[in-house]
Image 1: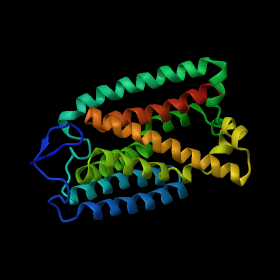
Image 2: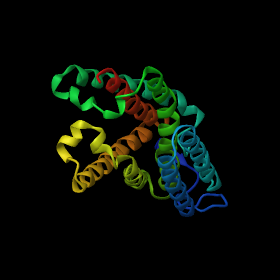
Image 3: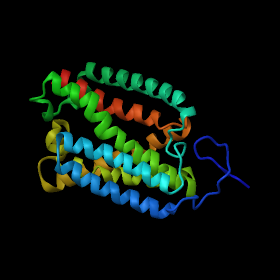
Length: 251
């Protein structure tokens, strides 16, 4: 009996487990994790064009791993027939995030959450570069391709959407260990809670990992319901890019 496609609930001719490809499903998962680990270290050692290029190259390599395992664009959430629906989801989510951020910026009780010391010396050109280039290509492209595209597709075919969501989201949380090491010092609102001590920084990192893992669950559900990687991409871009925009305006 054919299995059920984890994204659309339609019959899939390929059974769960090994796909027709030179690379097995679980070796492909292991290789994906290895590529992500190397990319994570390099991205946080380098900056500017080098880090951006690393993200783009890593995303392409990960799609190559999926294809070597017998996967397709549909397994990555990029089937041409789903892109229109995914784009509509993305636009709606961007509008929703914008409305929530606007309400938060207007309310005195939540306005301080946008404060970030990294905005202190940022000018309009740097903001534009970050919002239109660094966030979509340096962050969203790699993370969504890796976690809600390749990993979700690989694990989903082998174990179903539940396992795909769990594995993808846990690894997404761990992916944020390095970028969250200085989070409590950059954000005054967090610094007032965790302080400057090593235990406080550790708690901030743990909180960031748990928060991003939970966000990963939401992103995976958007991928499953929309059938397209564009839906979580849109939400991911909006949360990051509009956060920078509102933080810059309110600094």
